[in-house]
Image (cartoon, rainbow, N blue to C red; front, side, top):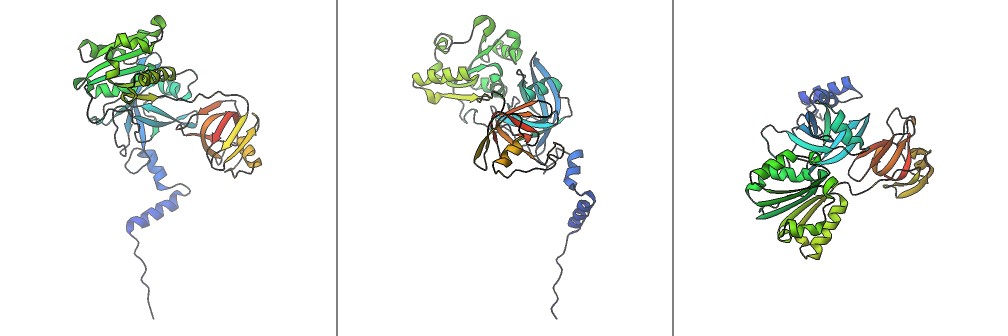
Length: 360
């Protein structure tokens, strides 16, 4: 008679199976997330430690990242997931802290924009202790390994944020730095006092343009403001109009290879009533009115859609809104997204509020 030995099951595995039995339908990790959300091995999260006002409509958010955080380079950004009124919203923000700080804290600096659901929440409502979701840092708006001898920064509004990390990391000690920065008024300049202090010590040359009194900066003005600008390695970040003009100017001078740009939210979403809904995975586009749930519109077009209670209670129909705008049929609230935001919506209680792409 042949006897087959039973495989040995470790004591740890037995405990885990027992824990899973006790905690069903949740997993033991779900409970660990409640008491140790920043632990190693967990999904990457962060805990907000402090919110520091910078201007009347901007604030620096100090975050303690989880142990899985791999660090960042000056100029990179992080995607942040924050729950606003029960809906998880994702946005990308430049990191403004010096990499590798001894306290392991990171910072983002956020400017509240009109009707900005996430930016206003972070600047005015979020409180220390709040847990947020994080992705690893990314982006190539960074300095090269070999620091250029002469550097020009062109920034406007919150476009100063990625540049601030470069300055704080010691760039002025290694290069001749000129910063041309635009803000509506002197008090609206994010990091204004810190930048002026650097300029006062001779660490950099600062040129401020206050657009409410001096008008918008015309790129041709650089011939007078920074005569050698075409010879400098240049990093520009700000509104689309400024960056378009800068790119044309550098191309006309034949030095486009010396220009590096970072664009914030280049896609403009214009909410309306109804619109074309594209289910990206299925390759199907349908016209939906502003009163038909996206779940129904998809199913009527033969798209296989996840669903549950169909009343907005069970969250069985949650999918990513890749781009566009939807309206919550229960209360009329609008949700918008551009690629990279990672916004999740409930298709059973959401209708198209313009053209939108649903990721399936």
